[in-house]
Image 1 (tube, rainbow, N blue to C red):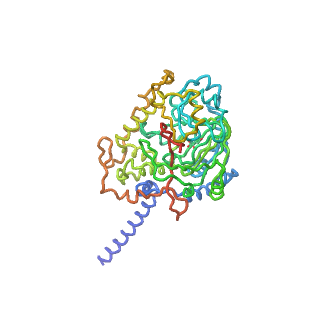
Image 2: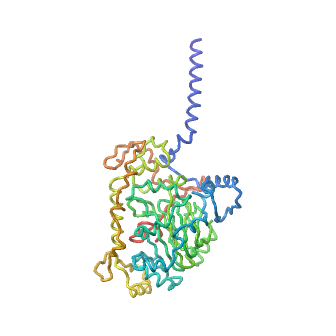
Length: 484
Ligand SMILES: O=C(O)CCC(=O)C(=O)O
């Protein structure tokens, strides 16, 4: 009798344990970060299906194959239908920005003499006076165009940066939790002549990109994730940033007319959209994109890492060997996205942070000290159209054109100061011991790293074997994107 009771108790005990375990296992909070610890894959197909479901909650007449133009879009609907999955144009935000009033005459009056980084038909990047660009803004052709692409211009002119406020769609941004030394610069100044264009790329760390057109007109080709095998992506390239990332750029120019490009465009799924003055385009993680300026166009691009894409971004950071996943312990399972990002950042080595501070200092200095082209030099350079003949003017301080304008002077200390807030925030899940910010590689915990190098972060169908693409290049002194 006693043994029968023990048996029943044991069986009941087992059943209860299984039920409790099942509940624990299916608790989304409990398993929140398990996928990241193992091998994170963003399932685009699933995200599309969820989007289709979510669309039913709202009455908007969506264009499921195109880019919707939205006003009064609630944050909830943005998150349900677009964020992290499908591009959208918001039409009622940029017109409220002070920056929307920027004109050529405003820049001529206040910044004519400022140094700015310019690329010439995607072949090379130079530093010129802004007035030089403005003088030549109409002086271009299909093959010879100019594009100011400067990540530091607004950083160096805080009074301009302040005219670009945040939006409800971009308020949550975990890049703010990155140590300032490795935090991506946050407002890319893009002023292109007619015919200028970006490369075909995915943004660094596969972030979500935003692009605000202040004046002019852009045409975009945005390629649905999962088709990278058709895009001749240059393999095995890194961004070269202190916080490294994989670079996914294509040499293809979707805005040239050739039978190969026409065939490709017949074959792949992409959306084409015009972005007018006042439009804010939000490009989700995983979408290759290329922009073409139909007319002279002034735009600002920024980046978001938020609840929808933070695992993709973190995966890219791990993938580029900035730190091993073994730095993270099982304890991170329960962390909120925000705490998880802080935790990963707290594991970056001092070496990476030092490199970040040093790079920033060097780039700012070289930009400030750059020799600027004289009008004749620039015209000759453009006319010579020489692909290999890159000008290396940044370090040539001997020319009489060199000037350091005190009005452009930047407070370097401010920029390279460690973000005490982020660095000192206690994180609930201490990993392996961290000597001076370093996370030691520990083979005994490498189970989390298994299959790491072959990891596919982005899938579109359950059977596909697509690689994750997060890309960017960088003009030689511009550690961010869109050059080839
Ligand atoms: O406006 C452009 O030229 C493209 C910008 C872009 O793709 C980016 O900032 O990632």
